[in-house]
Length: 255
Image (cartoon, rainbow, N blue to C red; front, side):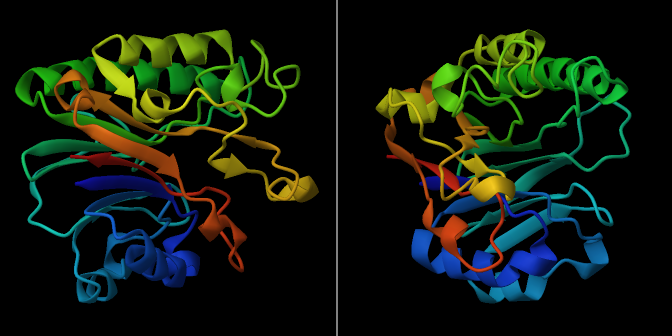
């Protein structure tokens, strides 16, 4: 089972990219973030015509998440239970016996801001919920745009992206480590210790051409799936396409 994640940064703009990558990447499951579409505008027919079941939870202009699967999708959960939040950032479902949790983690804007405080509260609530999900579903994958680079290997310049920077601050990384401590594994790091491999590049300053990026799109897998993780990677090609998302698809292959 190939399970992938992609922040498409507007499905309205990137639908042709999505349909093309479904053919090229051929994922069994693909989760999306930043669809930026209200549900009545979601391109369900086009995705189903491509051979995928789909569930989604969206809003106008911002956020929005979706899960696509070649097989039946069951047990759908929208949002973090018990955490009041109008932003559409979380979608969970079961596919082929594997629990899939799609996350679009809060950006946080700047360390010390109100949005940063919201990010930390959101991460805490999400982690508490994932702990409960792991007890119910030993075969669990938590993936998406985490808006946190795990360590200095995952940033192009650790001097710029430091303990006081958004996306790499001490508190954000501690929150991610608390999630991992539940028994989750960063699937990319199961297969590579390489630094300088990124999933996001700023549109500005020739970020992609100069590889000024961050690895903030993660696929975390439970202990029960660790031994079955045959391969993992990041697909740079879609970032080279015309009018690309600023993110690239990331994936794990569960044997």
